[in-house]
Amino acid sequence: MAESVRLKPGDAAPEFTLPDADGKDVSLSDHRGTRVIVYFYPAAMTPGCTTQACDFRDSLSSLSAAGLTVLGISPDKPAKLAKFREKEGLTFPLLSDPSREVLEAYGAYGEKKLYGKTVTGVIRSTFVIDEQGVIEQAQYNVKATGHVAKLRRDLGL
Image (cartoon, rainbow, N blue to C red; front, side, top):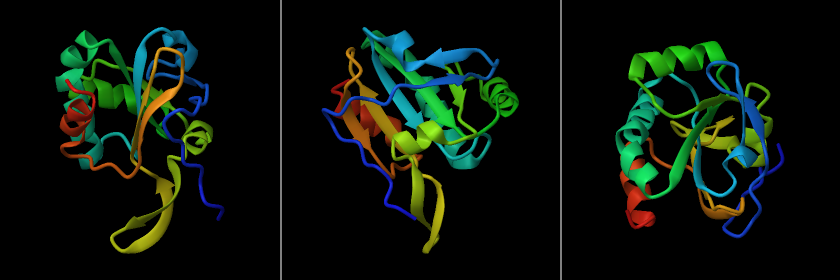
């Protein structure tokens, strides 16, 4: 398998349009003029992804106050995302990328280590994209727990 792309600060963020939990299309370009945190996670309703999503939910007001919008992306279908949103009271868009096109464009899908084995899957990753659609921060292989607190420190919040 080819080495997946790795985006870095200064790169243009790959544009995307994906359905949210309600099947409504959301595009990165809809958020031009605001800073956006786009995070990729392996699967809704799993323990790590739930911890991470709830951390974003609980930090949303301070992130919003700092002018940041949060978008979560996984390969899950919209119906599963809707269940996840209801169950955890998530208040930011969860986008569905079952073809993994966007995951691949961001380098968030590929080979990773899982329990010492090399597997192919979603690489938990977070990107901060500026008002012009340029990547400010690209973080790969982030930890589910404590990630949002670290991100807030990185952003000086």
